[in-house]
Length: 56
Image 1 (tube, rainbow, N blue to C red):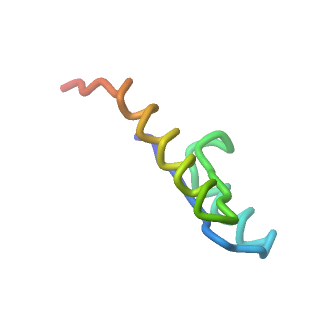
Image 2: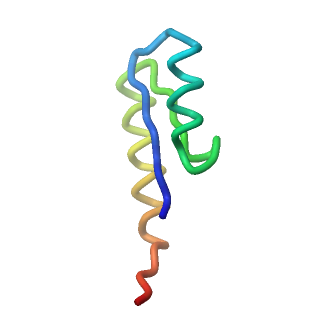
C-alpha cells in the first residue's frame, strides 16, 4: 500500500512534518503552496499510479 499526502497553502512546518510522516515516504509527500504546484503534485501522483500493478 502506498499513501500519498498533499498539503495546500499550508505554511505551518509542524503540520507539513505531520503530513510528511503520514506518507509512505518523504517522496510521497507534496507541499503545494499554490495552484501550479498542486497541479504538478497530482500530475506526479497520476504518473506514479500508471505504473501500479495489482496482484492477488
